[in-house]
Image (cartoon, rainbow, N blue to C red; front, side):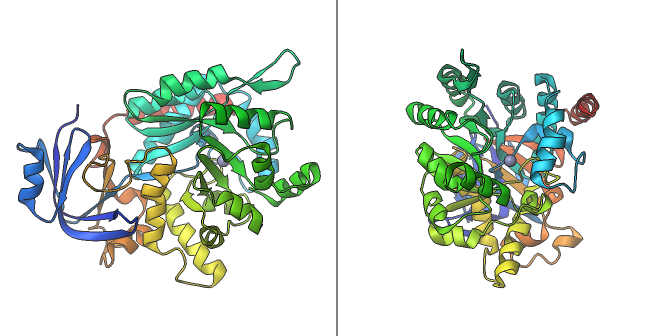
Length: 438
Ligand SMILES: [Zn+2]
């Protein structure tokens, strides 16, 4: 059980019921039993919703309150490979540097890297994330310990008697039951489908059928590089998103990472309400992969969130940097300063991202919603004068401006101190793990 908290006279940045992000000054927000009990311009109304004296009052002077951010594409344990291989294009980076190191991974090393990622995300205002990696049970345990919301993908395939990998519905069903329905409510499970290029042709329709039969969401990389598209055309005579649809995907909720190289037909495939495109601008630029045309995706009717991608290709997990970059890139490339304005970017990284991760009642500050909240300090030189608070958050702030973060009403960081994780121990173990991989 978590204590009750009253945020007192604080500007609240949140999407309204139509999904539009605005800032409401001078607001009182009451949190009780892990949820938002009241949001009111009147102190007495917020206090009345608590029914008793709050356990804690947070003074809103020089502060902003907004939902915890949702990172829609990540490989958390790749923190261990941060700054280990840079200035290489994706295929050389992946096959020559990353895969050989990952071959040495153990579940203990994955746990160490995941805990480091959780600490970094909590410190920079992220309270929810997707994860696509190995040893998902260790990662789930790390998220539960941290009190962090995680949508983790499960590598549910096993070698059959024919020596070929086949779907393992028992493993997936077990993970969906034990983790996806964990009483904490912090975990969601999806099926890991790495990409259209890594598996045998026969495996894809089997995986799509399993996802459909178990009603399991999917995490997949799509059209990250031109090479992926060229190879896919050569192999299947279809582009990646079109080919994945042909295999039977996009029938269950899907986190589609990157989507850099698309044609109009693929954009209409991805414009399904089941799909969220996880736009990863920093990773796409750093690996020289190209640039997703987010305005075209939005115009086609697709939903878009923002992801950091793994910390080996970003090289950090501060979603504030990616929000700013996503907005600036769209404006600059299209030569249109009106594109991807700050409220739209914040909508992507709060309620839209949270919903796509499977947490439909997170990402807004409204009565009944999850108390997944962050407090940003605004009295630093870089946020003075504050001006429009929504612009300030996307264009001027960074993760280090986040003072406190709560998930389900529990402080994960309070006044810059991590409350659920031992940061010194995590850094020590992560450095040891990095040496083991090198
Ligand atoms: Zn990725």
